[in-house]
Length: 366
Ligand code: NQM
Image (cartoon, rainbow, N blue to C red; front, side, top):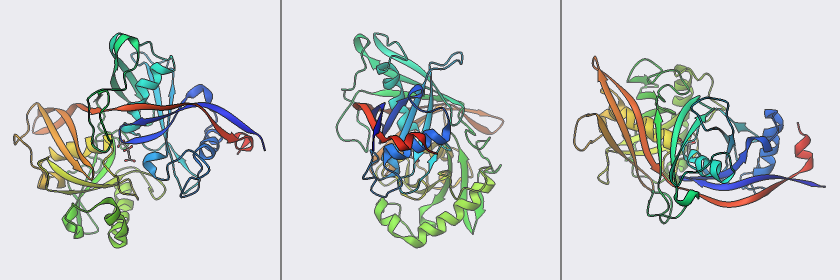
C-alpha cells in the first residue's frame, strides 16, 4: 500500500501539542480533510499507536493556518479536535493553547513577515469568529523559542508569547451568560453557565464530595461523579444554546474550590470527559470572568487580592499542575460588568517539521 506525505509541523502550543498545517496543504472538502487527519493521528484507537496522536485529547490536536482576505487580520486559524478513541474530528470548539503555536508557525511558513523585535500577529479564530493578537518574540526577524518564561504544566522556560483577546464574550453561545442568569440550578446543583471565549459550566467541587485537591486521575476514576457531571452537562448544553452536546466537546465542566496555594480559585476541569492536567486558555478566561460576577458559583469561593473589582484584575486560576494567570480589563456600567480585554502568557515551540504520512487510501476517503 502506498503512502502520501503531507507537509506539516509538530508544535507545542501552551500545554497542548499537535499537528499544524498550512490550509493549502489539506483537502478543501471537510469530510476528506477529516479522514486524512484521523489517519495522520492514528484515530480511532485509545493508544493512537499508528499515528502522531498522543492518546489524550490534549495531545491529539490540529491547527490549520491560512492566509486571509479579511482586513485588519494577518492569518486565519481553524482548530480541529481529533478524538483519540473515536473516528471523529470536531470543529465545534476553539483552543487557546494551540493558538499559541499559530503566530510562530505563520512566520516560519512565510505567511507573515517578522519584524525585528516583537511581531504582533492578528489571528482570526474561525471556530468562534473572534480575534486574538499574539505577540511573537522575533529578534533579528527570527522566531525566538528560548527564553525565561515559565508556564505551569510545561517543564523548563521558553520565550514569552503574550496573547490578547478582545470581545470574546458569547463566542459559541451568543452571550456571556447564555442562560441569562449568573446562577442556575440543574439536577439540584448550583451552576454558572458562562462563555467568555469557551462555554464552561462552573460547579462547586464540594457539592460532589470533592475537596478540589484531587488529581485528574482520581476524579476520572470516580465514575459516579463523572456520570452526574455528564448528566448536568447535557442539560446545560441545551440551556446554553449549544443543542444536544452528547457528541460535542463543549461545554467544559469546571469544579471550583477555594484556592489552596495562594491563588484566586481552585479548578479541576472536565474537557468534557477527561480531566485537564491544567486548564484550557479560553476555559480559564471564562472561569476567571465568572469570578468577577456577583451571584456566580465562582464568586462564592474566589479570593481576589487585592479584593474587589477594579479596571484591571489578575485572576490566578489554580489547576492540577500549578497556576494560570488571566488578566481581565473590566468595565462596569449600570451595575453590570463586561470584560473588554483578556491577556495571558503562553509559550510555544516548533518540535518538528516535515511530512506526515497517511495511507493513500485515506486520501481518497470518504
Ligand atoms: O480552552 C483543552 C487545551 C484545551 C482548550 C480543552 C484550550 C482553551 O488546553 O482555550 O486551550 O478544554 O479542550 O488545549
